[in-house]
Length: 85
Image (tube, rainbow, N blue to C red; front, side, top):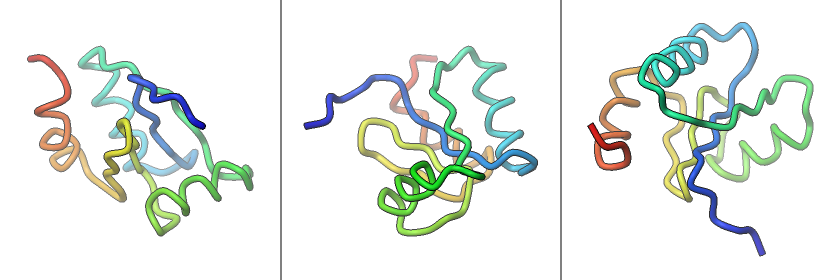
């Protein structure tokens, strides 16, 4: 049984410009997250595929709500009801 974490998990691939934009966006706003680099990690890639049904990054898991293969506009919308302004 997995405990529900309040810290979102961000699946990334090093060198991915969309992943860099996502981490910059979160860092600039002081939003904490756990970063999982799936490149070179079979277990990380499997979790990403099980979670989202695909291998594209960035992908965020916020307590079971998944935002896959996104840009910062989609991330901003996704976070609206999760982060106090």
